Image 1: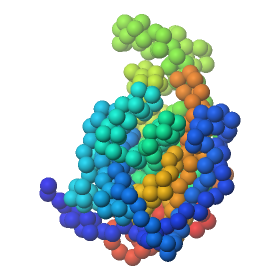
Image 2: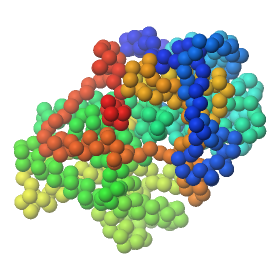
Image 3: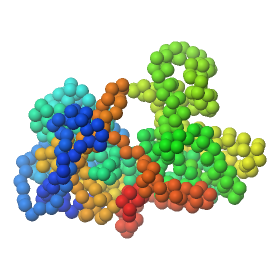
Image 4: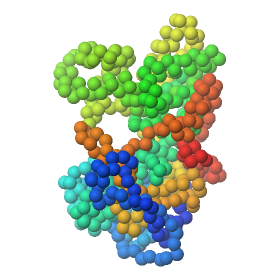
Length: 548
């Protein structure tokens, strides 16, 4: 395999860890925990793993001996920078417990466990993937582990390989499934521990014990570099407005963090749109006013950051999409039989008056995107809706109206971008390389302590790595009940942008100055080498949340 100069250099990087993990550790137990909501229902579903204490690892001079243990690992869901370092941390951690321990990777996600597809991860393989991006060491997949049949089928291969612990590296849904699996294996006394690790670039898996999900730091740095490059081009040519959509369907953490890093003229936060019950026209009008204000100062250029899931947070659009989902679920064949040039009129005719009005206001291309094939859950595929094009076109139309009324005298030309996959498999930043390795090593320590139903937790990460706090948090502690596919299910509660939180308040306090002035910041590429203040920086979101 040909390696780039960066890969060769990064292979030699030694991730930093919490001081406690370097030697023998003992566990400090906190008080019993309870779920964030719906305590009775969640407790009933998880009688064997509910109410466990939060754990903290501390240094000890006591020496313990551990038997050799075989461990399995699964990468679940979308890729996030640092996954390989989690696996390296697990490998080094279990080898530290006992040199004869072995690690097996299940291929292409949870489906690999069910279908018995795996490979042993040796030291030679692990060394090839340290500090690299991607999930290609074993691949990932989106199979959900939900049924007893799947659990039992997985148990067959775990017993055959004598695997006594399984680590599932994933987001909120994957870790929910990991907890269900832990509960089941405990209930039947299968002798298999299940540990989770918090992954998602969207940043929506976090709480008091999980400061951030891994990959968020790197992805935001990748996007911010490119946005900064666009802003420099924007400020050089002075003739384009750039509409930039960023990953984040359920939460706007990426858009917010990138805004804090690059200081764009406009950054839309979906959670604010929903809280203020803004219409699509409200959003378009606000952007158009900013464009007009800057034009009056001779600045016919700027940047607008847009979270991927915006459409679903606009109350009127949410209502339209809900009715569309329901209508097409029952009339898909009828709709398909309508000639293409008559399909939009057919939809409009069958919608309620309010939703028909909203549908009619959309550009044809976007209206058509709303009628495309649904995802497996019967919902509109939001990532296929080109929100950036929708807003650019509607702002252009609004400015034309304002010009006719004598309220705008500038020139408006737009460029559109969507940054998503570009950030998911980047080589991890030093922060993510360290954080992920520590999460993996912590998972190994949880396994050594015989724990199950826990998620690996590493906190205090705005401090130097030696001062980080490693431990475990019961997954049931993060759960509530939500309606999924028509029935109530236990799920980890998604963390949305908090409008009374320090990161959003900082944006709100500065947005007017950023809108009217040109206060762009150009963060540049991820720095892997150099002074600590350049290459070991956590996200601005994390620093503001911790008052740093």
